[in-house]
Image 1 (cartoon, helix red, strand yellow):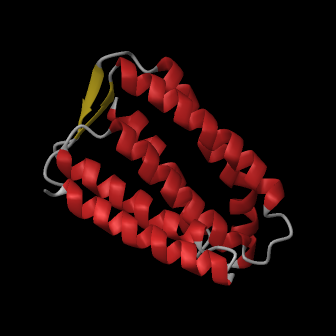
Image 2 (tube, one colour):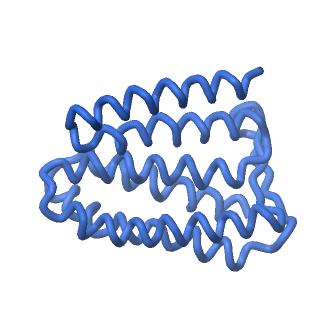
Length: 167
């Protein structure tokens, strides 16, 4: 069962890292990136309810799984990510900063999906931080004055929210 979680989390992170490579690799990554959102949909549908995967080797020990509400949330979220992924493919087609967009998009997706399945505080906080700081890149993507202002507001609220998690 941990293999499913490794695929779900490693696929977007690994694909995001491809955007740091040479141009032919980035071209492949652009074509592949929307399909990264499909395995989480399958997992949400076929994951046995109330079954958990032990990852004691993971950051202070870890467990991943989906209870009934988590399974519904994973399905809802992964379908939303799939729709957004295929829309983003067309939306960013002519964007000169599309590689940076996809890098942050995929890291945000990995953080969000990991957050849903996290069953320990260490893994929850790790994926929450990954989602939070990666989403900053999406907020500031247009690099307009408004986007920079929104990004400052976002990161301030996000760091405050993360600090409150520790209380």
